[in-house]
Length: 293
Image 1 (tube, one colour):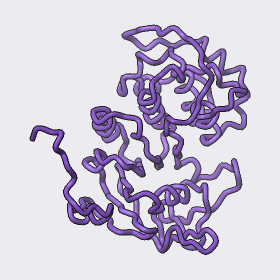
Image 2: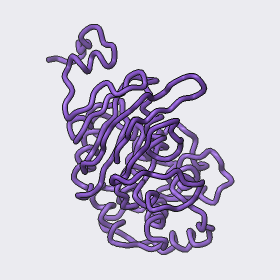
Image 3: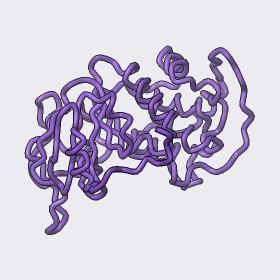
């Protein structure tokens, strides 16, 4: 995926100006920068949620067309978009659900029976993440969804079938999701929800995964853990593009792109301390007096 002279304006305000970036290498690509720099706008353009004022985006050297709402294109099959991982939004109504501890993966056929009663014919990724996890609308059919059902629906977006398969089992094992399978999503902590939503994106098997602040609710240990697991789990062709204000991911990234005032401030594999401080207008050393070092 390449951005060529990408510009985005709102009225007379230029939000992004002649952005040229490439995300062609498999692995994690991190976009950093201060608040208001244009990072989230850039992700929206990459995800086709906004149309650039000028410039273009190429996927595998082919220009990406702007598709009509809900229209499925070849590019859609390559993109997995989740800018809704922030846990502060209201979610599904509170329910109680017993947790079933298990050391082995259990295929709960009742979950499939429940989901088959729901009309999934027009379900796409954006609708799914809004309705299933991060919506305050309690009048959706997803008000009783468990983690296991959430994973089934993610897989449905790839296969078109509500069925357990090796991909779900592999992901459940790798990301240690078994203790959560039979709990309702809204009974989990913000960090647990975010971890599950992040891991579940891999069930879509997209070439590109685009995420905005996916670690915002995770503690420092969990951020390092998830960074390592993502790096290990992605396949040889996947590119993950992440906007983040937490910097653990920089240790695992194939590229770092810094945006400031709507332009590319830096791009490369490592950023120097001086440039990092300049990017965020840090004038003095960051005090770490609370650490005994």
